[in-house]
Amino acid sequence: MHSCLAFVPVAIKGTGKPCSFLYQLGHLPRSSSTSRLGLLLLPSNSIADTSTLSLLAPSLRFPLTTTTISKPRSRRRQLTSTPATMLPENPVVADTCAAFIAGGVALFFLLLWQETAKRGIFDQKLNRKLVHMSIGLVFMLCWPLFSSGLQGAFFASLTPGLNIFRMLLLGLGIWKDEATVKSMSRYGDHRELLKGPLYYATTITLACLVYWRTSPIAIALICNLCAGDGLADIVGRRFGTQKLPYNRNKSIAGSVAMASAGFLTSIGYMYYFSSFGYVQESWGMALGFLVVSLASALVESLPISTELDDNLTVSLTSALIGSLVF
Image 1: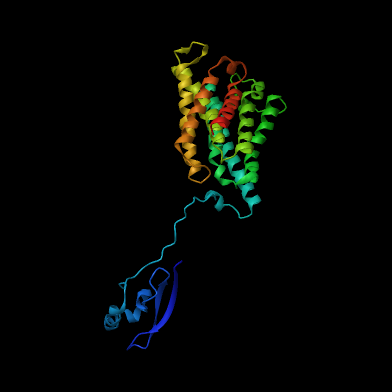
Image 2: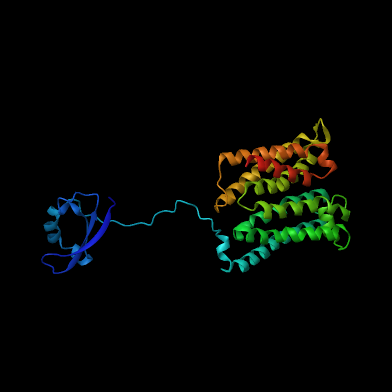
């Protein structure tokens, strides 16, 4: 039998003031009327009447205590994004605002690296890799601003999607922007943007539309493309004295740096998205990230990645292996 609660009005002798008995029924024997009494709730002005309590106490089976009823804790993590709740209530307007914010953040870093390229603060190759590492990662930090489902994924994909057309216009020479070309190319040739930068923008766009933030594949894909591949080139140029036996253009230090950076960054974003309830962190997911990072580093070290483009080969490898392990 399920228990239930009932309030019964009773008058306290000598006071003429009513109070309420809270009866707990169902788990107590029915034979005794006093055994059904679980808790006495008295008005504050009658609690001080100790003589009244002393008269009632012998007939009570349970001691008089004060209790507080607390709200039950939620057992499931909410999937609603906290940053998204700060935006307008209309979902379309909110996602539009989120798209402007995410695009503004990405544009800020892009303009920053363009300025460093103009001033020659960093070496051109290093500046290019800083663009490569930062844009995708900071853009992914903005994903919680968007709504869940296909609508949020679509609006999020607008920023890298528009960049696809931008790379096409710049790469084909239709649009002239020497600062962008210098910050994204190896040798300052605008046609280079039709390869690596175009693959880069396409990968992030598809990561939004196909996988979105609830899939660990999207995390592995972007983290290995941005952090892994970007740091591999930086470390390989500085510390890559020992070359790989099957590819003299790649070094052991660069491959180790790529696998480590891709894996650690993936773990960081796993916990980041888990804090919003998009994914559930686990050792199995962490192991999957390790497998994807090792496979991506291996493929990046092969000569075919140099012949094609490592942005393309790393992205395809991450998506393929991620589909197998997650």
